[in-house]
Length: 219
Image (cartoon, rainbow, N blue to C red; front, side, top):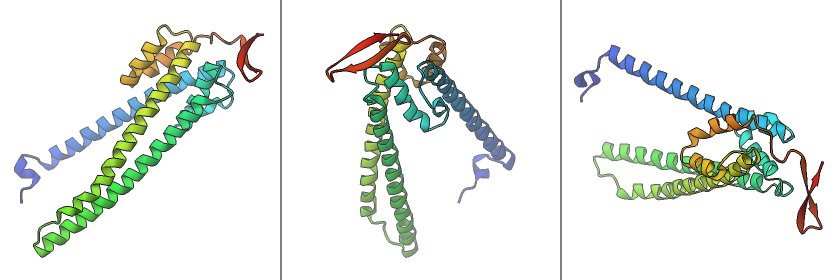
């Protein structure tokens, strides 16, 4: 059996690699946290300008996902009473988390069964039964479901982002939101840049009229 020394690794070089990968992981974590709170700060400031309650939720992971729906509904104004975006975002987010957890549970279960089966086959000197791999079919399906739900969630959040961008007078809101769909890293910078703007509808109150249409009352 070959050891790390056979591949040219020493204790010092192996320790250096561990330190290097740890530093890279820490750097990525810091960058991710910085981008997250940059976008959260932008959402927080815009929510305050739209007089949304409980703005602190925008700074808390997971809660900020649901709060993003509140901001989008308020920015859209016409859909605020129905809370369309918050309901859609909440539904797909909860479904996504559930699908991921079920996938992880299924995969770990099948992987554990495979390890025990392989160990037993080695001890008995027998061939591994290929049927043991069929259990991963369900895990693969669950992974596809989680990916599909994540894709739908991103579509809904992109539509919500368009409403927010329009409320804060961003040029080409649809194009920027779609670009953010494919390159999410740009969104925190966009939110920070436009949060200083005043909402274009800050002097307008949207109300239902006869359950048919909407009218605008100037304050």
